[in-house]
Image (cartoon, rainbow, N blue to C red):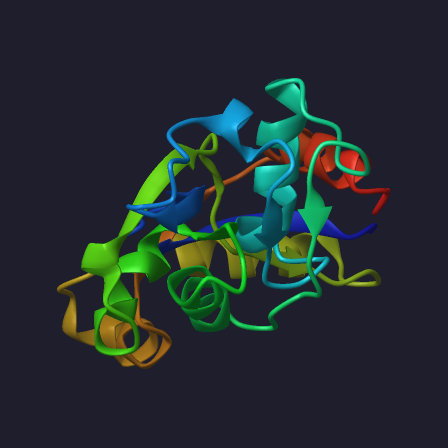
Length: 188
């Protein structure tokens, strides 16, 4: 059996989907995506969904060209580093995962930052079945994961250490927009 998505993880805050944001300093004069033209942008990693890919698709849809309309700074490796670069003025704007923004309040004074734009929502983390597993095994694992429910003492033995609330069904086509974003940056 080829690699296939089994289930999608549900997190406490984000649920089964998440999105990226583009942030800037409140005093930057950057109010919308067109204001990013000519600016220095920083992102997490080339393959970071919520810290690069989603934002590249958003910028492309807004008519901005990656290699022409703004300067891409070296990848910052962590969401916190992106926020710090924007806060310190090393970058004019940056892309991070939305639900990481609030978690940064102990690292950076987020009251000095603002969200310029939100990406679309995309599926959260997915568990996949490896090639070579029988359909019967894949179906049993999928069924077992979908039965895990937050609040159930037996389920919590699995969910709590993973910081999850459960799992939900997912299909391959749920990732079409992610593939589209990956194409924008040349990852596909």
